[in-house]
Length: 335
Ligand code: NAD
Image (cartoon, rainbow, N blue to C red; front, top):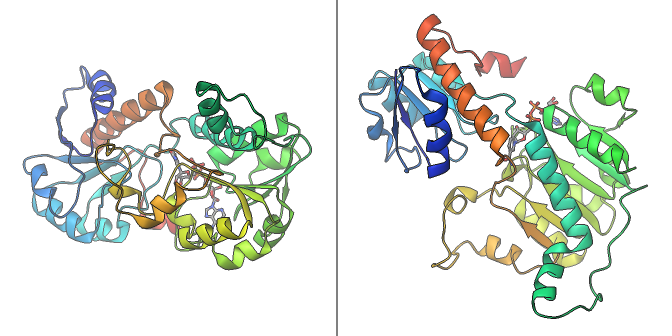
């Protein structure tokens, strides 16, 4: 099949080229994000391959359908950027990579927690400047602290395992408790109890209407003053304005983000020669107790290999059977 691959960087091409060798598929790479403005680039393709900040809305899908495209393969686990109802109505199948490496994201989550707690990002700069003073670098022992995990699916489960290894008391909130987490002795509680009891809160749920702005002003009023908040899920699970207010008032003691609600205009690009015209993001960067990475939690060799191989596998299975392997559909989500 001919696949129009959007939002590609050189590293995507390296891994996809390796995974597609001998598959018979023809991949055409575009740096551009998929949007109403760019979807004409897919003319002549049988399938479209999209990433997290590609906007696969109803208008884009209608245009792709008119070009004869029958399959969207997502190089991600999350699918909040696709209008699944519109895809179904148009007869376009949507496939994703359900589990490429939960370890990659879980380990990055711990990297954020550890760096923020022990202020490694500040220590790194200080030492390079010949400043070996410790004032301002005081952390706390993770052992014995209560960590609230929101979403205990594949990534959340690994996070729980790692935290248990640190000697943390782990509590969790999920619509469907995970038996592996229950076996670890993790207690499931409602969100308000999780907010009130946790020294650290880490988010691993998908972005859905129910989780949109789950962390808002009301939620912050229930949290322990000085709580550490970590988000490696999707940006809009957090109301960023509320969180900036929480940081200014000291309600949030540390904030670690790998995702941001308006990241589509920023992340994955080298903007170092320009100024940031997103004032909320720029404000976040002024806090010493905020550590932001640009959606890199997934970015390991193992994860990129899995993403590429599963993506090509999704196309091959669709070509052979007319059905997507790791299909996401409105029906499956409703279940
Ligand atoms: P998963 O589907 O295995 O787990 C998600 C869990 O969230 C499930 O247990 C589900 O029951 C739970 N959930 C759903 N709705 C909920 C709600 N309203 N409240 C609480 N829990 C809810 O997914 P996963 O592989 O663990 O990934 C989790 C999320 O992490 C993805 O949806 C994606 O948005 C994000 N992600 C981020 C990166 C990154 O690079 N930063 C990479 C991969 C995934």
